[in-house]
Length: 349
Image 1 (tube, rainbow, N blue to C red):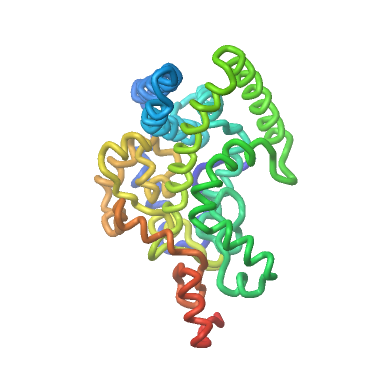
Image 2: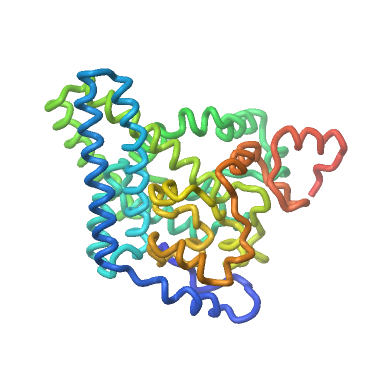
């Protein structure tokens, strides 16, 4: 199976292709104490908040909803640990990464080995226009969209609509989509999905019998929805922002897609902590073996990242208008701008 670390080839990068590897090498070593502490300060608070949300049902469901907000934040933090384990960056031990990766991915209802496989493909082809569709937000070029059938255009518009993506998307993705594997998946991926489904079914049956099905749904669904919406938003803005790098395979450059095809989401300090520094996504895509707690330090200390333009929480909201890739102008555009280009006869690439 393809491993989710940086590819050995830079697909045509110029200069010394190994120079950037030497620069980030010192940051790629997991620290057992820091990783263990991060497990503890992520999983334990999440479980306590989950239990608190259940107990607060006796008071008011609104109180349960209120505590679901921080609980969903810790669930995102747990997912980042699973993500690091998948890259082999959280522990030195392969077995420890596999074990804790499976545990931490089960909490957000994800099959560890399946997700790890799809995410590896994403890292190998992020920003490559000739290799889209696995582990990414589906993005069409202008020509592809205009050549589509009316039904395909409608489906794409619905998929890219924020109300659908962040409204229906979270629960569908984490509760439904990941209960199945992609066509052509190998045995390990299929077994990962099957084992996760069985484990989730057993835990759900046990909890439903213990606390009641209504209580289980009233606690779990809000947490899953909020965490899923935040997770999709983070993944969206990581590769759908103004000035993002996309290129055809023949000209695709690994370093360029990391530095300019992956965002530097400059969040408030507390949000960097709760999201496991995933806002330093440009650093992560350059060196996927860097543990999340080393990403900020790597960004701060290496001159390599000084020209990477940050995106603030406020400015990131502008990313919602993007829908299509304009190959001629090398930028993302919205449907309104597409209509303006078509009216002016400027849609041909």
